[in-house]
Image (cartoon, rainbow, N blue to C red):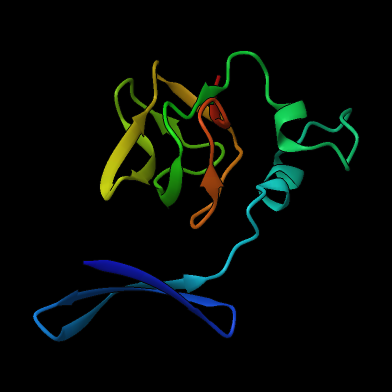
Length: 127
């Protein structure tokens, strides 16, 4: 069984089985909103205080289900192929790869590892 334990602003993912505990992952605790990631990605004409959902265009790839972002596999400016995994979301103890719908360049990423996302939350954009 997996557990997430927060201690001193660090999150530890621990798997416990038959009395043995194994550290699976460790990362800094993140705020539930993705605003810090969106600020550097925002366009120059956009206000600096805008929320990520406001800056996200209609073409942004959205979360198909609620969960926790466990990996961001691409960076802004990186070229990706259609079907290539960009973000991984854990939901109901399953990791779900969210892939680029088309080939192109990653224009924006609205989430970061450890962030909770809801269904239809913008994740990233491909140009």
